[in-house]
Image (tube, rainbow over all chains, first blue to last red; front, side, top):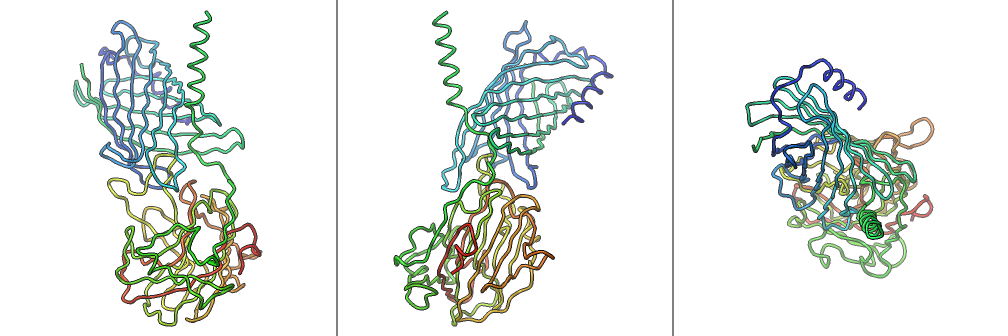
Length: 201
Length: 268
């Protein structure tokens, strides 16, 4: 995790600013992930991002994640993650920051007596580094979620490649660290996603 | 100000009660000891993967390993249920992450048993990691894989087999040597298993009091990971042929199915 952060900072410091400002873009993205820990498991995300007020740097994003499918509609589990972020820059630069608060709602629909999964919603705080160079942009958010018995951290570095004015291809790696406070039990897990982002403006 | 505080308090309270637990498994959660000796004349206490309990799982008085009754488990060629040819009884929540558990049962292969290909007498099957959103049948469907541990009856021998990969069916391997058996005779199995997703996990298995797992220089614990994730496994016994249809109707008798914390607690 530290290596990824360091690499992103290093790259960000040496690249140049870009004139085009995608911070004001409203976007929709779809991505798929299936590399999960020791075995393959499908997941699908659909995300929306809106500029809340055109003149300010507040942005709202909502991520809908479904589990167990590459076709989004799932009978088993969804996550809904609304997030409001403030960007400390109104234009794109080689490196800039954002912070935000949100909610991570886990919806578990499995009806199986072997399952211990329950639905819940946890507060989420995000801090992120962003940057761009020519057709490539990146972001490295760190999400912190609080639970009744512990905490989790997720780092979600994403690299976008601009295909044309409207569309970007991206790859995102997610690494989760989950920690139960009482008995100091912890778990690491990871996923990789590839997807397409489209500007709605 | 009071109104503001009240709103803040309400929102905070709502937030607190909406919060759930960290979606990971606590280690070494307690399990409930289990005794399934069929002495009440039923298969109550078990879950079952059986086409017809009146035909596939009958309570009989002969042969009984202890007490008056035993279970006659019959698998006919047409008994296909839940994606496999099977007739199995099931116990949940008995193979939890980082728990140390003893399992025991006795079995008797009917003298009329005819098939020579594989038949899983018992298995500890893995589970989807439900709390992290997983389910049994994702779409697209993934390659099914054999259970992490199984006791297999094949051509009158017993094989303890493990599986190393949740994604393929080509990573199974034999633990110890196959044990030649005879039909029409009781065999007592005791398994001592520490469940973990790394190689601190171990399995130690005895048949009729003799270890069948290899000697490691200290004891007969065979160290190898036996969980694919932290959801734990669950225990099934009976007959399971996967997608391979049996040629004949075969019966195996079971008795003294127990789960506990010590060898003596589960040995018949």
